[in-house]
Image 1 (tube, rainbow, N blue to C red):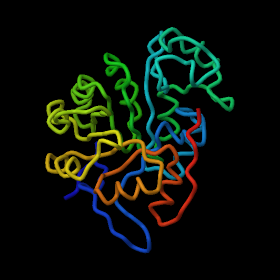
Image 2 (image 1 turned 180 degrees about the vertical axis):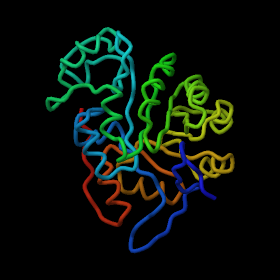
Image 3 (image 1 turned 90 degrees about the horizontal axis):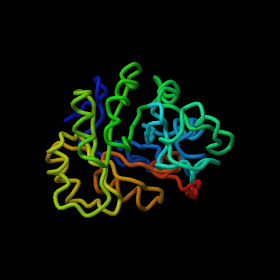
Length: 260
């Protein structure tokens, strides 16, 4: 069986793994906030580093005061820039004056799409319910070859599917959930994105049985990545996607410490 990502891009599913000269094949490698172990997270610099090795880059999106989608994880700029205060308190003009590390600025969604166009896939995490329509209106002008819209808010997953019916949508979860598969299906998700400690063979088998992909986060250690392959997940997010790829290809590399 072959699952098809939005707009016709095929990927294996459920993922199969062929052990050949030390290489596991079939899993998607996702650069978590770019390559945040090596570069300032969610910046274009981190995405460029990530694109050398990852199948998809992942960014978090929030809106500025004037309604521009920008790539930043936290609700405030304090942790990742030299500024303070909530993201939604800044206009885009003011936000781009902040240093997000190594001289980088917080990129807009349009800048992210321009960077990755034709080169890699994209996972967008919708951080704020109610922002889905604005985010989709930007994406639809420059659709990536592979696209996932994901969120920890079930309502955002449902809205993503409503606004872009062909998109692959995913439900993120980290806490104890009685029936994550049932919840994902109820919001029309195509993917579940559990925290790594929530993954088991049972979860993977149940998800695949329900037609769902499984992409856990965040895997940085070689033993965890190889265990994920043994469990049969379809992909995983890593802070250092190049090290992750080397692990899967049979090499050993010291994992980096996430930046900031």
